[in-house]
Length: 325
Image 1 (tube, helix red, strand yellow):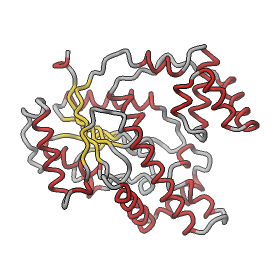
Image 2 (image 1 turned 90 degrees about the vertical axis):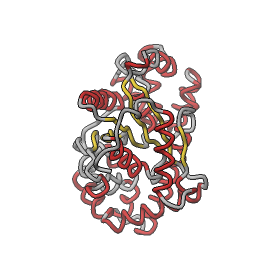
Image 3 (image 1 turned 135 degrees about the vertical axis):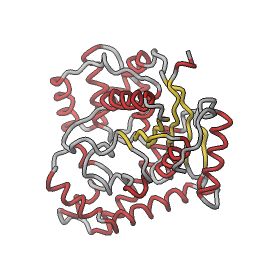
Image 4 (image 1 turned 60 degrees about the horizontal axis):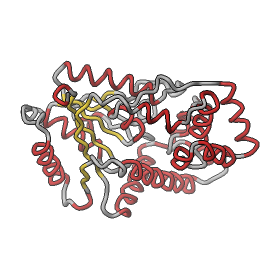
């Protein structure tokens, strides 16, 4: 029953939209703690590149699912869902409001919509063969093969997303069942959460791009190049080296590009990532969108968000504003 579901807030949106600041202030107001939903902030040592909030930005609010995993350890969305579920249960047991905040749409939807992953088959031999096919024939050949058997999944994937293309074909070749059908089955269990969705984006796309460019410039000033260089030397084969902000600097380290060119690449790739995030979240009709570029100050935005939460969420009514406010 709905009354038995765990109440929580979700703060989502593209990178550089202001999710962290909003989540922290909501936590301070209603005695909550933040559960991060970022596929790169889980890794230790990638502080600048992944824009992890520092001590001042956290304002004393505990942040979970962040900075706990060595960068050379693989971590799947199923792993995230399992661990985040445990975290939310612990917060609820302590009478703390969970605030799920981040921009990794797959993590967020899989967690909050209770998507199950346990019955997805794995076949390393098939996967290796597919990887070799991609090397010799190109990603496009694999995507065409996937489109012939699972057009829905193929239509959602970019030709450069080799990992997910290979995974979808691996699942089909191993089981005879498409990823689309597995996804349908995975959604058959109802969610245990009562979610109030808050989304941040800009009305003017150029305003978001300016925020992204300014963030990248701040990262460079904070020492992104030095952080990326040290990470590259220590973890050259780690999957996490592909994080935006790291992989674009590798040509600079190897003498193939200037620093200015690599910084321009970071900005461009971050803008592209933000567009993909927006495309993902806009499919969710439950999100209540707010536009920071329409507000003269954060306080006005925060007031409007709080008013909507108070009007819409009966589980907020019993909570007194935190003394930390």
